[in-house]
Image (tube, rainbow, N blue to C red):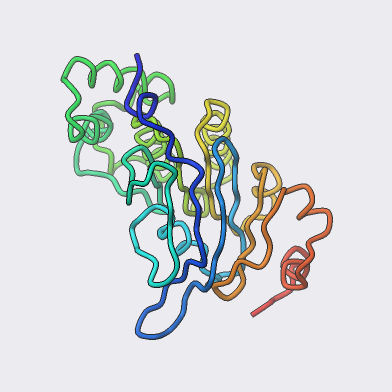
Length: 243
């Protein structure tokens, strides 16, 4: 069955042109120029407070740039066929199955089609046995798996992930990383923030490195890890404190 993301005109590449974000005169992101093409896994890195989460929120459309521009390829301000999953999953006070169904129904999908996609999603991600359980009573790893599955069910062209495994144990982290890789294999563009160097090495195709709200390095992951050009990025990889 074709779903909305398969039928929607391409929204990528996403471009930021000298984009900045300031609050009460304080610049939190400054002059960020970045193009995000389709089909890649971009990992956003940097020290705590560097602006990683803000950058993802700005790209997704939760906040608007106070300077510069954010430009989707199809011209929409905030296209529907994108999604974001947070460090702490945002789940409804409903069952696992109802959490999957709600956004589909909100977009006007018929009951039969919605039921089919929910069933497919539950089976695809090993959640069928949990379908009737209250979502907020799941373990942390199960909640994050549900949040990712719900995003997948919407068939986004691009998925933003804000440190999705930072609160999980290694076993749950492996499951989430496997899901992310499977999304990427299906053609979903991934933009993910993490402070975990091992995880970045496992998942990244491209790296965007932020320092004090500025994008100071961006390029292929293998080149970045072999020898970053910016001294701040070099120090970060070495485990040094750069604030």
